[in-house]
Length: 228
Image (tube, rainbow, N blue to C red; front, top):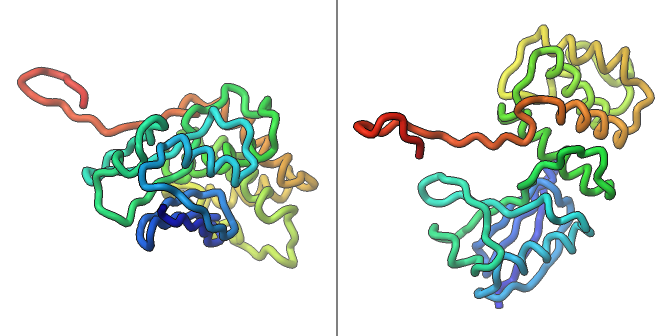
């Protein structure tokens, strides 16, 4: 048996797992320690169910576990195969709990924890430049995140330029920061974190790149435009 440790570090709520003393599993959702046991020949389904149980997550079908191979290619863990045999790299291993299938209507999800996990995933997509949108939509999405994380604007707590302390996108301008703060100050007051997260999801699902998972490709002559 291998011992499995879950750990998180604020503010990313990162879950890590260690098998023996070196294997790790990272996930952006857990904020507490727990110690579990996992057999070396345990299959992906066992590990996935273990995480879902830890989260009290019932709507499991939207999620999966992802890992990166030695060639820096991302893969989804196959639930019918041994966890260790799927990882070609040497320990420590790193895997992430992610949204695999984006719900067509996130607002229709039954469980609040499911909506929150989808919110975290889309927030991550926005930060990594996978969720593309025009400037006005970007400002609104970021303002929803701001409202969810710090609540109503308070001039005593939020000095000029307070929105610049948050990283919503790969890069953004001071003009966009001012627009985010303006929306947060004037349009979102009174919204609870749950309401702001729900409004964020409703807006995100209308964007063309919602749920898109881009992969790098190249053209290989002499075969013309062949994708890899």
